[in-house]
Image (cartoon, rainbow, N blue to C red; front, side):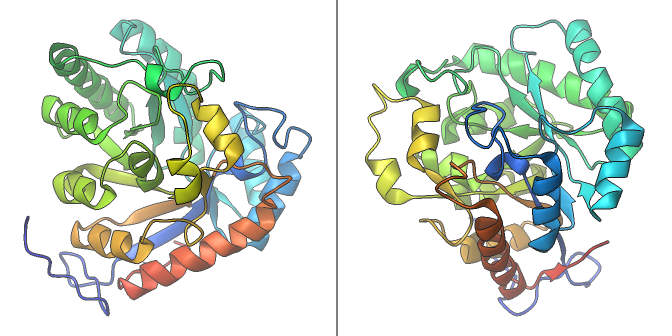
Length: 318
């Protein structure tokens, strides 16, 4: 493991300046696109106004957001928010390159127009993350040869997206083909630097991996961060042979930073060591009737801000 040089009092970049962090939140705490019964009746206006009330300056895309650039920009401007990225359901694992380029182009053009930093690429070919009838243990697994081929193709796709003016950040995810620490290590080894990484400590901990080790190994590839915590009691009580990812969500496996088992002070220091600057997106899919979104948004921001500032980050609105 390489030596760590960042102190708790001051994280600096290569130019000797304070590291900068921008705070955003995902709308999934208010309304869940995979399970409309969770917050389905909550309006976009409520989500955005409460996100701003909680102190965030950015928000990721959700299913209730307008898809026309002028309408999207208008609603974000109304609430003083910026678009800090958003999910794309990728299928390149089973799809051909030209077809995948065609699929992503509308979102790519929209995100370019409104000035988003990246598209969050989640591989959904064969994924069971949205299937409540599929136990966690039955997720699709890739052999070494398949991952090597997939890594090459994802690199080509990432290069093409960057050439179009909108980079992607690859999201390792529970119940997706790239789920575990070993999966991610293999994908990173098989792909080139154009394939940037979305780091999500909550998903990695759920998958049994070590979030800090992921930063140590792949910190130079991280271009986006989802700040998600995990409730240890729920996690250890899951029956992965019988229960699905969505069952785990309904049980409350995820929560905001500071309310779970993960040490976000250590995570922030390690990200500072790796030189990461940019968006930190609080994300925790929960039942809003049990976890009031505004309360958890405030709690998550406070805990994450404390961790980032202790690691030497300067939280900025720029």
